[in-house]
Image (tube, rainbow, N blue to C red):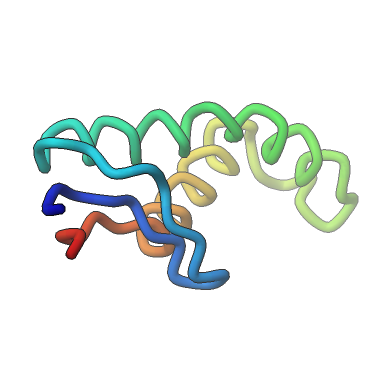
Length: 75
């Protein structure tokens, strides 16, 4: 079939197949941003993270998710 997918390294979840690598990369970034606000809100409620700003928390989560979501060629 061909194309590209976004894979979650931790769970092995695979997205739909995209025609181009650029489309898959965009979908990867959209997935990260789509869930980022909720993750930041959840983590900022943790009293152990009070020394960090919301922007610091968002940056850290975004970087972590970038390592968990990657694009690869579909077979």
